Length: 148
Image 1 (cartoon, rainbow, N blue to C red):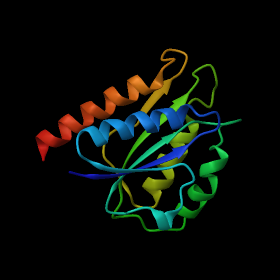
Image 2 (cartoon, rainbow, N blue to C red):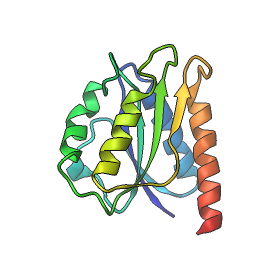
Image 3 (cartoon, rainbow, N blue to C red):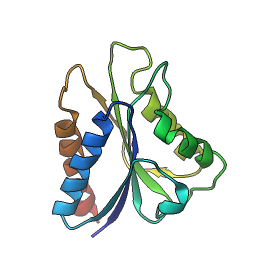
Image 4 (cartoon, rainbow, N blue to C red):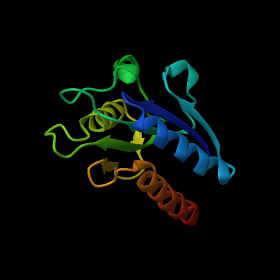
């Protein structure tokens, strides 16, 4: 059993739906999981795997609910943190999934370890992004469990 912290960046709620589906998947496999809709560093376990699930807002910005958290991370040493990233976006914009790319770069610059390449979900091609995210997470879990 592993512990996961799902960190959500959302404007219109799609990332929250994805986070809920990911939480359900992890709980069904007896993992420990907490979802953070207003993430605060003090409420996160740095020994858990952080699962960033965020959309992009405006001209490539992070959603309001995750901006302060992202700024806080820029000043930290997160070398003990491992993480995964799921980005939601619309490929008709030139800032497609830029919010998740920003979060990935912030965490990498703080010393955190990315466990596999990020998943970027194009909502134009996948109107129900939860399905793609759950399939991706399940595949990662299966691979991770076999190598453990």
